Every structure is written in structure tokens, then in C-alpha cells.
Length: 622
Image (tube, rainbow, N blue to C red; front, side, top):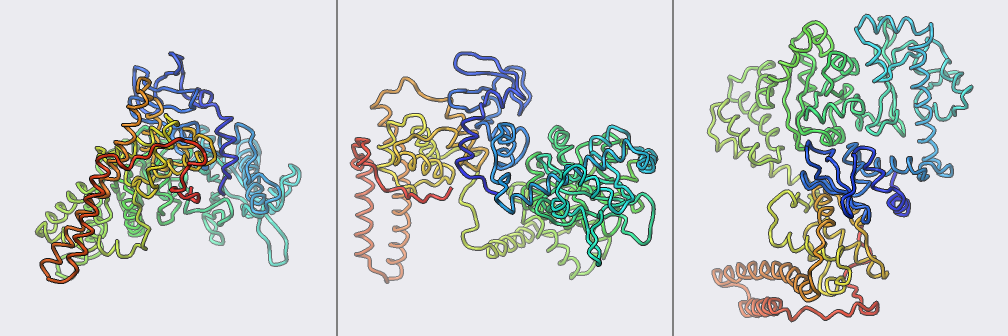
């Protein structure tokens, strides 16, 4: 659910960044700023700074930066909406989803309340009731101690038709909430009963800590029942958007800078029990883009650790390309045929498993061995099929250097010329581009991570000037069109600043940070907040603005001139086209270039409200 801007504004105003940061960083005041050790990288000398006036932070060591909302996003590795919800809860600010007049919001709220209640009920049943002794004995036999039981909040669903329903009535938990959460089922006769009965329960948490659903496992074989049953899709549980164990193990994943991806709940808990904690499970589903994006919050390195059988190999093959598409670095461990991660770590021990993980195959080696385990590559048809399989994978890698190295590896392993593999990769990439709908490719690149060009620097400096020197906003806005700004995040900031300017107000750094999508640009923007040049005079600032505007306009004009020259050469070569008309256009562009260089275009802005331009659209989509 989207959160209205007025509520986000309330959170900006009430969430004091000193309070938010101080929960994680010990701060000391030096002058107008507060300093402490950065929570985002290891350091001995404090370089992490907080500006309480502008409500922003910036680390001069690693470059991290932002406001209170982006600090929560970065420290907890959650989305913007999740960070806003977290701050809203702490500040007791009601959200639309808490509105009892919104039917969908009420259903979600009731479902979350029902899940939280059920998790506590199951957990208490396991640890504190005689009925839970059978489950406790099973866990002891499996070697699970109290630490992992409490860490994952394992529980026991009573072997009763309505134990959960009866307890919910006593605790005033809505029956409608139980239905929405998928905790009750209905018989053909219309009788409602507990969906989970006589099962070991695994609560499934969102990354932000809410109970979204459950997995339930039989602890004794019963041919009449499925070994595992899970919560069905609901308003709060979407299997494709959750990784089991992420909430519990995200800190270990960050520390190791590696995630081990397994299939099942028991695999996660067994590895954690034996000290391997940087592990999550896909819960037996094919990996999704959303799950890949969740992993990217914590690491780029993923080891797929699946069962050593054909089904496990097939699952790993399905997962690789999804992860690669999102920029993750993948390696694969296929266990011996008789093992899954749970059985292997129990029988062979954690050190042996760690050695296997350290020796994991890269994606090319894995795909070759997986293919050859099914069919030989001794015929031209099979070799061509294997090549296409490998190329489809490598073409998804966005890092050009890594992609080229893998291409050379494929050529070497298959005894083919490098050029053949590069040509096939090019074909796949062209097909992938053609499949994309027009307009879906983002014009934004992580420009802040590259050496900035003159155009990027000029756009960045205009943002800096608009935010730090509001008196010069008229000069900027009367001489710049929004469409002249290439970097989408800078365009969004300037668009928001222009909207406020039209209303006679100033945009704050808080607002500017919240329209930015790129973490690199957020960090850059926070850095600009600590860089006000106090000694610049009015003429120096005016010259700075004019230089930035000239750079942007000259870049566009010169690109138009270059394209026109190509058109003129083609017309001369073919003898077709109107050369006189092209020459007139060329001379007009050269005159415009001269006018820009001589600053004739720079209007003398008064800054009065009636002089404010309409060059920026009012309907900028934020």
C-alpha cells in the first residue's frame, strides 16, 4: 500500500535523526555536527557525521548518506515503505492500513494480528504444554537446541480440530482474521476447523519482522497426509516475495558477504544449529525477481546449496538465471546423491560442508556438469544445445568484464574460438532487447559510481545550488527546462524544488532525499548537504550557475550539430535531400552555440512571484 505524502511529511518532521541514529551509533557533538563510528563499514576514527539542522547524515569514509528514513532503510536493509512503517510505529503515527474504514487495510491488519497470535500460541504449545512433549522430543532427536527453537520461534499445532479457534475467541482475535490469514479451513458441511493440526510449526517472517504465514511439518509419517503444508497465498503472504530465515540471518549474511541458498525450513535451521548462519531458503519454489532483490540488500554473493538429485540440479538451474539477471554472483554446490543440506551437515559435520561451499562450482562449470550428467555432448547437436544453454546464462550478466571472462571460459572448455561465443552472446542480447517493451529500459545508470563527466557534474552542481542557495533558484528555473536534465534522480529533485518554488516555498534536503531512488545519488546528495561554500560571493555563485547551465545546453547543441553534420554528409554522398535547408539549420545551431557560450541567454531574474516561469511541468510524476 502506498503511503500518502502528508504522512511521510509528518514522519520527516517528527523523526529526529539524532534519536534514530543514536539507537545504533554513539554520537559526540563537535561544533554544529555530531560524529561517531560508521555503522556501515569498519573504522577506528569517527567519520560518520549527523547534521541535526538539516536532519541528514553522511559518512566521509564510505560515502553512505541520507535522512532518517534512508538510515533505517540502510541499517535494516528494508524498502522505503518498510522504513516508513517502522518509523510510523515508533512515532505512533497511524497509517492508512490501520484505518478501520478501509476494508482491504482492515483485512491485512486482522491477518497480521491473527498470525502474530498464532505464532505465540504455537510457540507456547511447544515449550510449555504437556501436549508439546512429543514435538520437543522430536526436536531433541534432531539435535535442535533451545537457542534455535527460540530464534526461529518454532511451535506446535495441537492435534485438535479447533484448538486455535477456541484460543482465538478467548483472546478476542477476529475469526475473520484467522480466515484471511489462512489459519482455518471449512468442511463441506460448512464447519470451520484449524488448518494446521498435529504439526511442527515454522513461522515465516517478512524482512521487517511481521509473521506473514506458516509452514507445518508432520513429525511422524502418515501416508494419508502431506509431510509439509504451507499457508496459502493471502493478502499478507506472497510466497514469491519471501525468503525463509532472512529476518533471522540477515546480519550473518551481511557479515559473511555471502548468502547460502537452500530449499527447506529444516535445512536452514540445521545449518544454523551447526554454526553456519548466513543461510536462507526459497521454500521449494522457483526463485523470483523479488527474492533476488531481497538478497541484493545484503550481499551480491550467493551459493546455491541444493539436494544431490536430478530435481535438485533442475531447481538450481532454474534459480541461476534469475539471480544473474539482478547482478548477483552465483556459485553452486551439488551434494552427494543421498544427501540434502540437513542430512549432510548432521552426518558429515559443518567443516566438511564449509569446504564444499568454499569449493563451489561457478555457474559455467555447474551447467556443463549438470548437462553432461543427463546427456553426452559428443554430437554436434548436443554441443550446440549446451553452448546455447551456457550463452543464455552468460548474456544476462551485466558486468561486461565478468561476462567476457565467462565467454572465454566457455570457449576454452568447449574447444571453440572466442569469437564464436561472443557472437552467440551478442545474438542473445539483441533478442533480449527486442523482447523488452518500449520505454521499459531505464535511462538511469549508477552515474555517481563512475567518474562523472562534465554534464553529470553540471547537473549535480545545479542540485547543490538549488538546495543550498535558494536565492539563485530564479536564475536556474528561468533558464533551464526539466527535459534538459539527463540524470533521472537529479530531474526528480529539481522538479520537486520547482513545485515548491512556484508555491513560494523551499524544498528541504529531507524532501529531496525521499524523491531519489538510487542509493548512490542519495549518498551524494547527503554529501552535498555538508559542502556549503560559505565564502562564495553573489557574482561567483551567479557565474557558477551560468557555467552549469552553459555546459548542459552546449552538450545538447553540440550533439544536434554532430547529428546534422552526419545528415549533411549522407545528403552530399547520395545527392538527395535539401542541402540548402540542412545548411540553414546548421548555421542556426552554430549561432545558438555562440549565443550560449557568450551567456546572452542568461536572464536577469528578479525572483518575484509573478516572474516565476512555467517551463517545468506541474505534473512531474513522483
